[in-house]
Length: 473
Image (cartoon, rainbow, N blue to C red; front, top):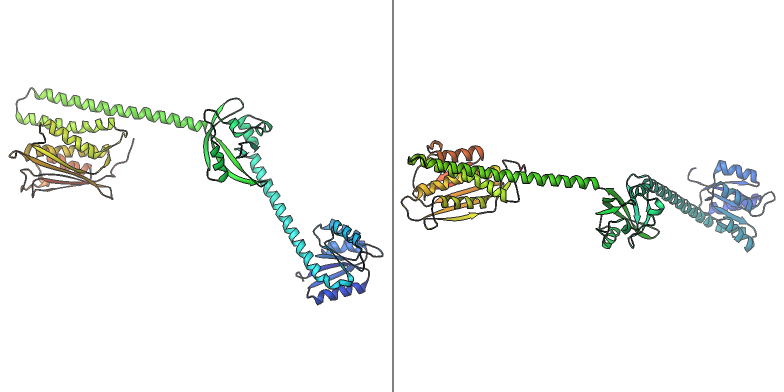
């Protein structure tokens, strides 16, 4: 029953009503129909039946089609209304259509009525869909206006062609200390600091959707300059593309960042000064060792002083390099090893003619926590080569390699062709202080391993992870 069309006929002649019913059923139309002759019955059935289509004769003894049309449209302006009459001149037909009738059919052409009913139903559905779309659009516009106007963030609609502000919310007026009327008379360029002019291409990129946000400096009515971050997106209405802008005041944020940068710069200078003073203090200690050694003649004691000086110099070099570098926590291990070996050779008066060094080192940056123990280990191994490896040789070669694999493991090899060939040394029972220092630093401080091969001289292989410590500065 719910799927049947409900047809309400305004007709005083039963025969005409029955002929119309017959024609409609013959066409395959599924419907129920009611007939009325006067306005009271018509209004009553409009409410109780709520018909899909009203089909009305134009001339009735107690009623007429024009009055029925007005009543039907006042009840539901989208209700389909068809004039069905025996004779209707062109002027009256035009008047009916202008008043809201959807179609008219002459009784002598009753076979056209089924088609007319189907068409006006389509028109009604299309009209109702249009109305729904218009209501949805109006609701969407209402929501947008509400979001736009009541938002606490400053919002503006800007014409990308000339930068004119065509709409703004109350928050934007408060932000720039302008009335909305005055703000809408401005261009974006008018509220932008002249020291940092607004590039024209920014508006074009924003309108195309390629530019999502940008930074600028805006001026309020009182002349106050504010740092702003502007988020933008293209919007289209009135057949034209505009830019929706949300303006955020980042003045306080920028001041905080600037203060933080200044503080960081001061702290970096402080740390740099600490490195410098530490290096100087270590140099003072080295000088004290040198002065103290002048009062001793015991060779063994002098050797101890010299070894202590070398170890302190290795640590001092780290602080010197960090003081000069951009980073306060990392240094290039390859450069450090190169400088360290050069200083050791210079300190012992060993030139290239006696000991040439061949480097094969990758660029490896390490934290100071790694560099210091590495320096002490390299110092002990190179000093050992200089002191003991070439006592019976006029010339020697020292190979130093530095590699870092994909697992962040560092491998250092120190190899010579000196007098240690064929020697058997048990690293677990070393008796010299130097080798004890090497073994303990590698295993306990660097969490690594150390091995010695004496097939062709001394070949030390040291491996340790590079991720033992976290950067702190």
